[in-house]
Image (cartoon, rainbow, N blue to C red):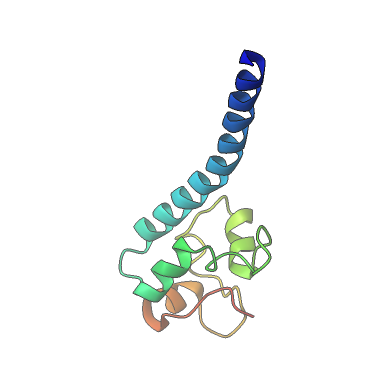
Length: 105
């Protein structure tokens, strides 16, 4: 019986570690993005928290903005001058002025 309890404990720890890792990463990225853009509208701040700011509906796939951030080592402010979705507005303008997603195509 002790062996089964030990096995159950080990499996539980493995499962929790696997689940907690991605959640902690998501939180840290969203927190860093919000710190870089403290005046971003609530809609975009919520999008950062829910991952749709940088990801497609098929997580872990990223959208154009997420792809830029990955290639720039998550330099959030460094990505502001680019136009990830090609709509004629820079990512910074979309985030700071328009309240629109910078990676929507």
